[in-house]
Length: 290
Image (tube, rainbow, N blue to C red):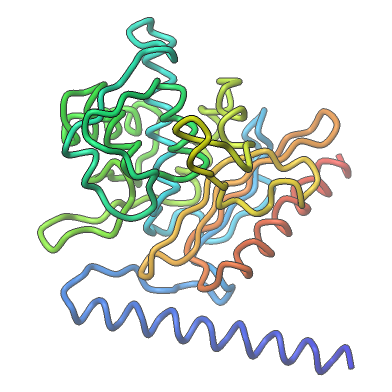
């Protein structure tokens, strides 16, 4: 029975990888730049580190480039928290929603032009709902335009040593025909995640599973289903679109140990969640053995 189950699961994984690669090849024929599946494992790349020291506990294709999708929004959060630290922005600041922010598609909280929300409210929308319209509203308010905010993102990535990362959007949506894709690696996302964890507010936003928005008339739910299910998991962010696959930057703390696990380009959502949970467990087992 056990042997049959293993064979069955193996067949599912292999089939999923074939389907994922087929999607990629189809998109490539349509003119999109596509990152191929290079790993024999059911993901593009992965890494696990000690959050405090940065010690690498496990890595597999950690420098292979992939699409971050909405995991990219972690850089949005970092830019905002940096601005607050610099004293040029406050969580209480009120942001007037522009027409440009109101028309963005994908995951959103359906902002309307002229609505007003605090930076704090929009950060919850950004991290819990993965709202592209919230990302746009914040970017325009802080930098004056989406392009100017992307420049801030790339400047920060360079300063942090995220040498294999290029941002071309503020939300991680699939690129338009005339736009370059956002590119990163598992290792670079670890650098970003460790920097974010220096801010206590990071976990306040990324550990929230459900949150009301617009005076509790709109319910938001976190896409990170490991929250409340994996011991100690309290962040950070998920991401997905077809060519990118399912990705996640996750962190968990048990006793005095905190680890970060990054996984890029998994063909299935549930498989991604399973693999990230395994990566976190691998991290804690290694720390326990030390």
